[in-house]
Amino acid sequence: MVQFAEQNSTAGLRALHLNISRAMAQGLLLAFSPAEGPAVISSAEEGTAGTIRLPSGAFPSPSSQAVRVVVTVLNIQQLTMFQEDNQMGKVLDNTVVGIVVGDGDVSELQDPVQLTFAYQQLPHVRHALPSPCLLVRCRFTLRPCLQNVTPLCVFWEPSKGQAGGWSSHGCVTQPKDKETVCTCDHLSFFTLLLNPSLDGSTAQTLVAVANAGCGVAVAFSIFTFAFYIFLRCSYKQFRSEDTLRINLGLHMNLVSSLLLLNLAFLLSSGLSSRAPPGLCSALGGLTHYCLLCCFTWTALEGCHLYLLFVKVLGTYIHHYLLKLCIVGWGFPVLVVGVAGAIGSYGKHSIGTVDNQTIIDLCWINSEHLLVHYITNCGYFGLIFLFNTIIFGVVAWKNCHLWRSGVMQGHCKAWKVVLAAMGLFCLLGATWALSFLSYGSSSTPMLVLAAILNSLQGVFIFVWLVVLYYPRAEETSSSLSHIVRNDKTMAVSQG
Image (cartoon, rainbow, N blue to C red; front, side, top):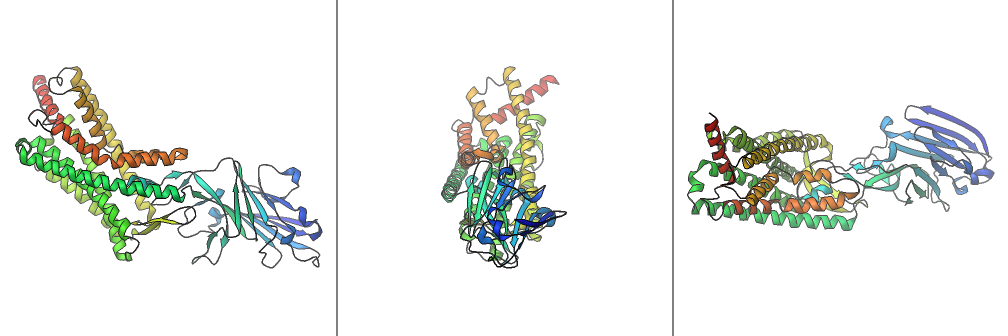
């Protein structure tokens, strides 16, 4: 029976001190919650709170008249305790339950202690960078992925790592709809760790898709370059007409950035496992640079469309393409230089919930996630918002010209549709699919994003071939036709 009970409460910590008679210890049942802390209850009082069942084996021999039991409920966010280095999962409600019986260590219990962690619904977690999104997109993730989670019963192991860490040794996890039951053969500080749901077989599938996608993207980038050289050598218009030369030059720079990004990914994944720290940091910086170049050239495609369709100034800026190159290839150098100066790059391992390493990558390390949030998430978000607005304006202008009959003599309807689809691809539509990869549809959406992003190079290649070949004098591009139409309309309005 409970001979004495005392509750203590401070900020982030609630404790219950008990003196227990061993004769009644078999029926000991406690409840706990983050808000109320621990309390002794009967089996009839079990509700929505978490519970603790202490077996008789957790108590000393019968010679002791009473046993002192201390149960604590801690908010580790408030107390800044139990912080594991490079922790991948999230602690449920930031709550840790500690159980101490007597003065000695209690372990190897024949009848295990049972803890039930109650919840209404398991939350999603933000996976540390890099994430599985990286794998399936054959690109580096634009944001921390929101994923379904797998609960894992763990306890704090002080001897793990340099400052301690979570371990599941001796604990069995039994997840249910509204609760997870943990049975452990010892007493310690316990919690429910929510890990991203990525099993080994799914992870290997995503790796295979990523590698295959990189190969496809590299191949069609090379095909696009070959087609560009063919056009330059075979048709005079592509060397003399400024609009065509600038349009194709801009597209080739975007294709170049995609090619470099895929090659950097393959190089990083192939060398990172055996690369020394200095080389891995350099590879991480190179890959980040290629990603930012890809984003920047996507933004420049949008700016070019704005000037070409709305302002009709694209070909009248002195050294226009050279200035675009300075921005497209030069601005990322500044960003990567600053990120490298603060030590943002290094080796990062991607693993499954059972701690099996899937792939090692040289990328932004977990200590500098803010660099990722600003330079990748924030930067692309602004670019995609801008490009979406530009695409809407261009589409509206196209429809206006089509309804007015200005374009009907130059362009067929299917070419207008194809041009619109190609432009939307150039402006980063496939990249935005990663923002939809959350919740229960995470894996299917990621696979879809992987396929479409791998086909981005294919889309650009087909788009250029259909619009520019073989009758260059007729299909000198939908863009140049519209530019000429805009000039005609401007003259007539003047």
